Image (tube, rainbow, N blue to C red; front, side):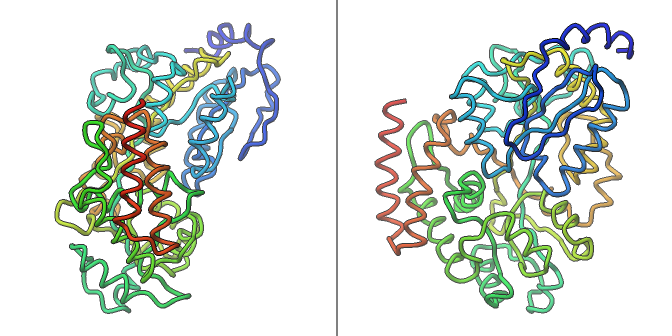
Length: 425
């Protein structure tokens, strides 16, 4: 769309444009007095490394036209799900465009909080390049209510320098090898052989951290709406997390703390997503050449991956401008630029990734060798109630970590509560 045409289309909306400040992570306002403001809500504004990648693509959008200006609004990832759902429960989301994790996408689609976005890929001629299986969570009756923007894989991330100093010759490939390496590489309080979340304040991330272990033991949280919290894979995962908590973890640390410790060279290995590579590089460029990855340390190589989508809030007063931004973003050259600046490796749709780019990344192999499982698949039949299942399970795991309650007893309590939830939803 030409600048003149865009201006004619959107200037009529200016009188109703809302620009009230809100107590969020960050808000940037356009200096253009005649531009339509579009609030883009995401946790990525607060994520080291990726935030600048997004700001780069927003600047490119601003430079391409003068009629729309993107405003940054959002919350850190640890707060995002709860803050968004709280706003929705209060009657209005303070956003036009919104980033959606897979579990949030399920909630917002079910609640009719998103508009259809089918026309965007059609106008770009990319509607057949999206993987339908990855779009299922945001598809209703064949219509799209969100577009995949990022697939975040998880793998074993390790500091090769610390491996070498600790006598670890290769990345662990079994549970027991990982436990042994984690203990061997731990020298409290200066160095840790494993890191992860363990507090209820960071439920979303902690849920992912422990879900890897459930997958590694061959299980899931819920199957066909029947909770599996007392099954062997879940019990084994809780025992594994307790062992690492006692022997190798910085106890009670949040994600920002242990990732800072990682770029300071104080964490030898942990299981996390590829966004960490950008975080480590941005935090300490000198650590970047020392960081490598391997598939998850168990035979089936399964780990969580997270599907992230872009959507347009149904209550937005700037829907046309929001669509214009997404149409710009999803042009292959722009999405590719964003992907590479963010050090992402999985493309949102076919044709975005450059094979030469992947070959340049010395750390990509572990992520490429991981067999990703989306969080909703772990809660089969209760996908719209992930937050409730998560609260039930993690509150009991917390008892195991901090009060000495046995995994069997704690998860028996969790099983009962989860069965009651399944019966009433």
